[in-house]
Length: 114
Image 1 (cartoon, rainbow, N blue to C red):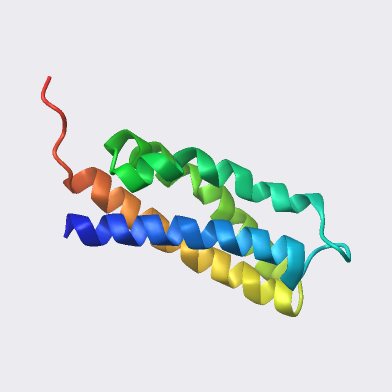
Image 2 (cartoon, rainbow, N blue to C red; image 1 turned 45 degrees about the horizontal axis):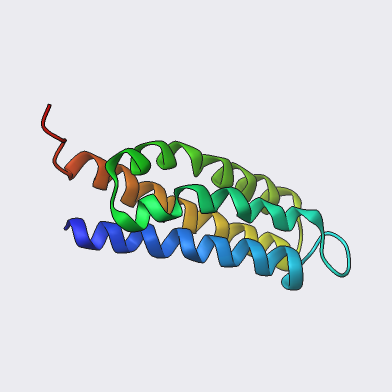
């Protein structure tokens, strides 16, 4: 169960990074040629290595952090049209996958001995 949760969390955060980059650079940027919103992918790099290494603490704080991307996805799915709205729905799904995997992984992993 734990390996599947790690794979789910790791693959969803990597996919979310690539989605943010492709969305704002190529697929549906706010301005032709891209926009500075491409920088929204940078904060996702903060928890990436802790997630890939299976660090419980990173899973705990990243599960709350990812809710920013969930919120952005919901808002843009509601307000944008066309390709941007569809990409926002993908962002919502990826953030929900990450959130679910992260909270269950953090709950099921052994707590360190004190």
